[in-house]
Image (cartoon, rainbow, N blue to C red):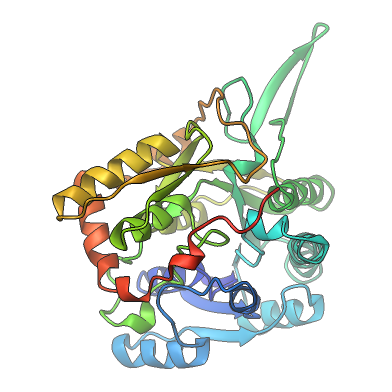
Length: 381
């Protein structure tokens, strides 16, 4: 199967390329390096500097004998996408090519405008390229659990059955984002569902929770193949940030009262979920929505777990509760379903003390690169 990864230079994109290539898929990737540009402009560079794609893929070929073909291209360019779909005979598109930061989307008018134009524009271009070239191509779009918000009812996997005045129907689960970034993800879902209905597209929409981890299982032992691991307040997810803070003696930054609860997933489990989505493609005109997380934790629980793991490796970490810089509920009901990947055979990596101590030992190799200025909240909304 020929797979096209949009956003191959990202935290998930590059590990996914290696993961699929080693399992026999032919992988092609696109990236325009906008994430790197934004990271430089906001002083939010990744923990470990990684090569650009051509150098990375050349080195990977030398290590493994596997070729990953890449294009430096903007995914909003419909003509370029159509040409790549045709030239590479693509069967499945994995759409990761979006500005992924909620804080950045709320930074100012310019960053908000860019987020809307890039995220919604790239999704629309993917849709048009598929319709015009290969309507049977399976689109897998990486969404976010943040689309749902924190409703006072159980969160279903994308859909909800409604009985009203004696009649019933099935609808997309109500969504209520707390940032502009998450709102663009809602717009993506609506666009894809519209074109499933009107043009018969086949779509899998993955509602992913915050991802954590640095080590990619099975990857060559070389820094060039590490993911673009961010620990800052703009691109870094909370657990990655906590680990880096603990390793450098910075108090763990808990926003507000720390009761905010979300669904988390290990980076390697995220890769496996995407492959399971490839192997279980929907039919014509169908949109399958899967909640992609493995465990639910509050921010306080994560902080306590990091403190405990740190003590096991001789680090005396502390917690600092900060006024919440974000527009979000802190005390809320949160129960989200995630049955579909378990039913497909996912064997999740558990976030426990054994994993956390191993994770911290891995990250500690690079602790001298951690910049304390990057871990404090710099954007408020």
